[in-house]
Image 1 (cartoon, one colour):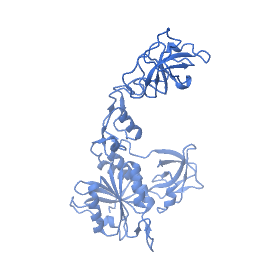
Image 2: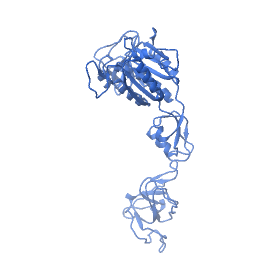
Image 3: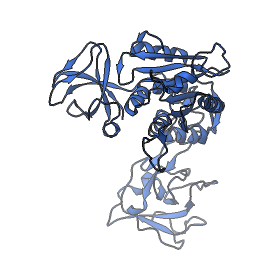
Image 4: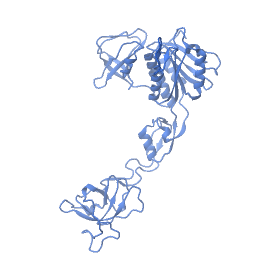
Length: 433
């Protein structure tokens, strides 16, 4: 481990300077969810592509309903039914109406749609209507309908291109494709799209003391929570996460496990074994060898001016120079390190421009001053009240306090040269939600 003390910002800058966005690929829409769009997508055809009804009712001419009321309804000849997807539409002439369903195309001659609730629902038979000369009932008439209210032109009609016009920008490059974006792409006829794939992140925890949840907890052992938390955090960041069961404190076993995982990893994250103890297996297994084909050949272990999370490792491993971030083993140290360093690396691999959690300014809401060691940037768990613009610490500063972390939604940042923060003072807050 280098004797140099790295700042948080320098360590992060070093990571982001070494990580490159993944190469674009063409994916079918279902597989593109969560990926980042590489190119602008323009609209090839107007949406909707034709005037259509926004509800069930009758397609009519506006003039035929002038003066219609409860006591003097307009009586129209019904010339047919139009369902969604209908072709060969009838032309609506004077004194006529066509029964129409939601989403069905507006027929020629019609200017508006009256909801079925404004009518008597229509009656059977093909009798001539009061709005046509005697003996002029249209051929094929399907009864008549009484309409009790007038209507304005284009009422209850979704106009062609009212959503987007042909040539409009549908989605800009850099957009993360969520369900609404996938729906829009499908609506404009795109079956595939060019994206940067979601990074594959392998999370591997180390320690002979680790048991898996569900196993019997014998003396001296603890449950492995880090790999579960970090795999979940990787998925939350947008990655495809693979969690590997804990590896014992054996350098050879760890090297073998890492070699096995390199085939499916765009980024590998380890937790534990990076400090200065006798069993710091990650440091031992990934010590520089000078051989770029050997795992660990490019991993540098560092001390950072931060609390929690002082010991860190970063580099590239294997023939493809897969980036690896080695995080400390204490649960809070591990999670804070992930948020500060791993999450931005994942977002960079995705090709996003903004890779950081949002930071806001808030007033400290505490019973007494917060103390912090000189020369270290401290990250405390907190609860943020956006409406009040205030933040309160949650739990203590211990890096093992998992329960406090579970109830926090932000990190309170105390700068390196600040040793005390009084209640009511302004602090930076990193939002985790």
